[in-house]
Length: 356
Image (cartoon, rainbow, N blue to C red; front, side, top):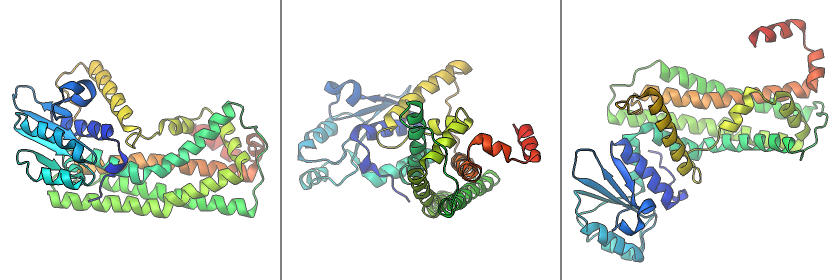
């Protein structure tokens, strides 16, 4: 099983993730660390269910040391049926010795925490892996696009005529086209495959095997297509900035830029807490619109639906990257938009008109 890189997250971020995990289990989660530091008494999170008196108390420390023994002692003394202490880095020797003497607290390391997220909310687990190891390249590409777009708006970049294509530029763009097209088509194939099979009655071992295979395929696409595409586009932006500026001018206000500006990190370190807050607000808005108190908006657990949906999301992102490369090729071959229009055959203009 691929492991979530817990070391990259802050302690507060891990608390938010664990709170989300237990909310998926049907608990109301009270973050004592955030709202009642004086009332913690060894626990960062307090989880309860309506109609039940028992509680789950959770303490979270990234790398426990000797000074954290007091918190563990307090947690061990609390009256609760379930008490959990979570750590994601190796504890100090003194803390580990004390851990071994505590019998009424369950200890979760990084692997145990990853397994729990995998079992409770597979979609969330997959996106934590994908955003940390794969989508970072997509974000790097898109952020570099958006920076130039914003710099043009601020007047920090002068709009100049694009360079005409030479062998070096065309080789670079054809390589980028090859990588973006293979990425897009491969992800569409995964989408079609998982949208048309039924994985609702598989056992846990088979589920884990399928998910590992799915992630391996994404890692292969990252290595063979996405990462090289990131490097190729970075080289293009550095060498042929005027051509990309022309692309920004020609497509300004188009759906491509709405996508690029909206495609921002959500589950990466530094972003995840804000993403949870926005998700809570959206939940309240949807609930108010539907006025259905019984609707808990639970995530579907059908594995084929989950993998198909994730493939669709990634394929849509790959589509916009491929479209961008296509536009850059057009500018390389035909120059500015008005010049390009003059050289466009009438049949193609007719077709484009009815496509739009």
